[in-house]
Amino acid sequence: MKLKKEIRINRAKRVRLKIRKKMIDRICVNRTSRNIYAQIISGDGKNVLVSASTLDKDIKKEIKDIKPMEAAKKVGLMLATRAKRIGFNKKLAFDRSGFKYHGRVKALAKAARKGGLLF
Image (cartoon, rainbow, N blue to C red; front, side, top):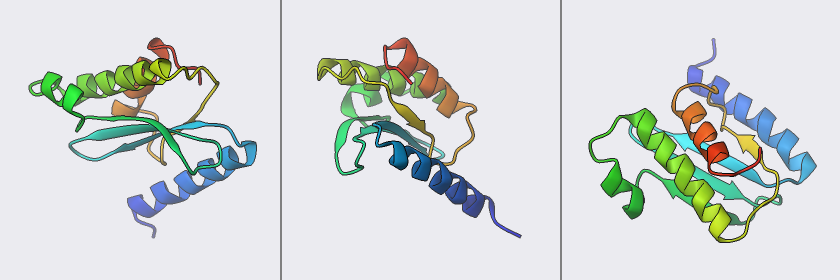
């Protein structure tokens, strides 16, 4: 029987393979029990264009005493803001790293869309 982590990693590999074939920029989301990270990665997978996480100085001050869902929303908005600042306006693929589209991952995605990112 496979462990949950193995199932998640296999799911992530399947999604990333499909995204790489299309050579389109992607939002890659990773989460731990305490933090959430998001990056916009170029289509070839070699460059990180923009990143945001709960460990950034700008966000860390704001999220000191708030719930994880609210922190994920702040990270999504910060990612969208930073992407707009560098003039990024292409359509993206959403790579959730095998995590289910639920909870903090969903909150980050909705906040990024609200901030102006297209995916």
